[in-house]
Length: 500
Image (cartoon, rainbow, N blue to C red; front, side):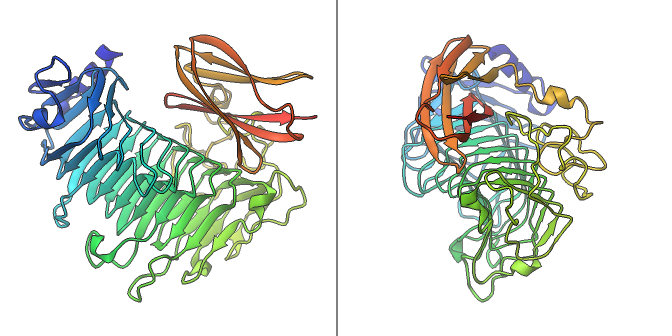
């Protein structure tokens, strides 16, 4: 892993390092501040495997367009930054890549990126990939990744787990031209991703949200006027694109809050606790645009009775009638005679109360061949690819996963990744999960009822190979349950049927 990871970075022509600056016990540099003080464009700051103290502040760490600076872990996930108010606060960074670092145990925010309050000169060109945030040691309005005034960025293939009760896993204030791709979010406090304070032109695509808190994605929010970037903007967010994501649980999968011209397209929303989506306005200044002119298209929504009425929560000072609804599939898993959602505007070509026929169990939310969602989506330009990275067909499916017959190997998509496999074993006496790991490591199990309520959680250090665990369902009423298994960045979701 160590050799391959370094080769992947150093072999990239735009990232060829002039020097490798090693950080850690016995290395040349004791911490990030010491290495950053001498780093030049093209350098790599290599964090040795082990635990590193947080609380590091670095200003002006900037590469060039042709010579980025890279902060990289010696082994992916092996360099762990623990403690501190912030793990790192990086101010006015540019052309910077952060790869393979793990953060945890902070009392404030995890990783804090900002523009130093110079709103006219944002931090820019930042890539964060294959990093991990675990178990922040804070309970208030604290965030795992806080971004203020960042332009032209990507966060991809990262894992965010166990956020602060009152905070976001990712909080953006005044950020622009960014993307969040193929990340995994589990057990959030308030939000997984929040975009506010004038944030615009953000793409959120191909991510997994499991128990995403109050609002898994908060498209907008409430920000003090002095913190907007740029100052004087009259919306919380604009042009936020939510594409091809899977949502499991959370009070609400998506909240439109003071946002305009944003769109939620080709997502799968599975058993939210209260609402599929919310339409709200928290900043009511007279100069501000009210939440409106947004769209909700090609989404597959499965609710239980608790979340069925209202499926949408609509607040005051909004323009819900300006929303556009097209070709969504709505299904109540507990009530076959359900009349459908309380949409604030008429929907074109919606499908109501038809079982989407998710693969049983819906470990990756693929569609069975007879699903009414296949080929029933509205023709749209974006997204071009589904949750599994496969192209949508000309007659695209509804939901995050393309199920059409000419897509490349739908059967292959239904197979678990080799790193983690999980099968549910049911007998007359018990229900168990057989977990197969390619290597030893920590695994988290979470079990939810059909309303999205957590009824069991278990952490275990498992060996490679197969391990079988019994699920605590002996006294549970008949019905369907959801088992979520996480191993590193891999998340598998299994539906469990119980008949007492």
